[in-house]
Image (cartoon, rainbow, N blue to C red; front, side):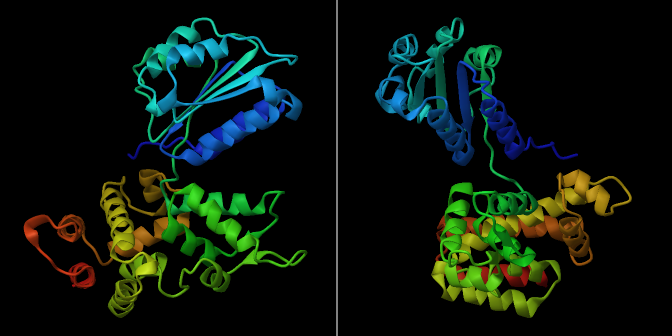
Length: 348
């Protein structure tokens, strides 16, 4: 069975709720591959743990490439100036050469200091003492990108319906955006904000596929979601037509936008074949960690056209085409031809 993924959004909500209640920890290690939530937590602390007047003397921001662990500890051990607390932030902490030396500070953190360590691009080795010590005295928050379209769509809906934005998006528009942009939450929120500012003040803010096409530039008919739908339903004409559009319109993302999404789908389809019998919507949802029965139905439909053996061959072909597109084996086939070759292999 697929490993259950921790819901970063839920962890974020709990963390913010705790801080809203005035419960700040002396140490926060914020780490992971998704920078969006790391920045959100750090920004909340810097904006709310201190008043605007207190920040001048009690907010210290350092960057990992320019600071040592000793300098950070010296900053953290200072006392606040005419304030209840001070905040010390290390941005880009992954660039610190001696980051692990901060474990010494975790032995006896200063209660009037909030130390925030922002480690992006991955996580600190779980075996390192700095993590276990940080957990004992503070918070360790791991920020991960959404793995499935259903999770991305949930994020999109929650982001738009917030009190700040009060907007909605229809189901197909959300699917198009999720499939095209994926789990890059910074880019995703930037694109959604671009759409929101286009609405007239006071006008209803419901985002449709037409608006997505106008404001973000994702075609409502020629996009990654529709391409995958064509493959799922074995619609050769539609799949070839979309592949041709992507080749002729580089701004759509082209070959390099379709390959990762297509690989991900067939990789999950292969996993779905290992779901407990009988293979139905519930079994696939459990096997793949899905929350949407709608998404599970896509895999059931695909199973009608692609056997487990064929799925393995498709995965192998995707790897081959990806390698060829990067110049391996000295094959200089244009991306458009490679894409049409791949579509033909998948469907025939």
